[in-house]
Length: 222
Image (tube, rainbow, N blue to C red; front, side):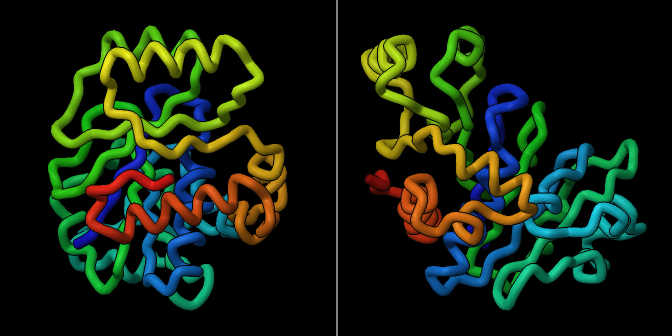
């Protein structure tokens, strides 16, 4: 299973909107994609048009390893969503290894431990003081990479922090996702950003990131 897990170093860095945009970008490159919401707040579906009243989700299944397909939401041909469902107390487990039939599985992770399954981990950060402090306290996983989002080179503090992280040898991806109002507007429209604003800067950047996710991941997207 080609699996990429995305986890914000804190809340509010835009992980769920990024997972939705990345899923569509990979689908548009011909991949069969599954986006899995592992967050109790159950928000990933909002970015993919899931009705608010739809209560389906893996957390409501008695045996997710056997029944996960019954909770799927089909966004479009080749792009599926497995919602969380919002059931209290549910947590990801070994059942994730039962997911099959896709070229790429994207996991939207909550804060906390990462599921013990083979996957590449992208930690999502903003170039701000809050994330900077958290990176100093961060316990690094093998092969983990940092993805900077909402970046603007016109903001001196952001550029200074990025320079510090590069000098410190942090495992930064070569690609940065720039601040783009289209991302916020896309959530309001309940669409992935590539569908809402296909010519936006961030949509083009997500296409590059999708290529990296679909490949072996050895070379940085640029």
